[in-house]
Image (cartoon, rainbow, N blue to C red):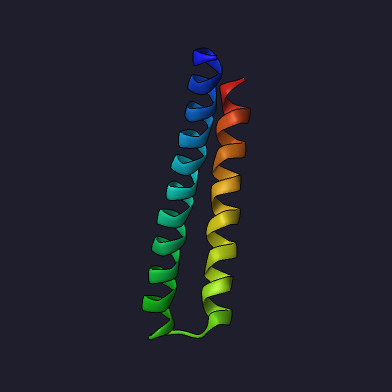
Length: 68
């Protein structure tokens, strides 16, 4: 019974930890969006986000290919 309580508590705390991380990342992204929205529209922010994601994907792909 003690082992079951340990696993239940561990999983509950792990889920709460991931929820806290999610809330932290959402708050950071939201604050960055609000800051950038003062200077540019949502479409421009979306374009830059897509460009950054594409650049990261290319860099990761090049790293994996060059590693072989």
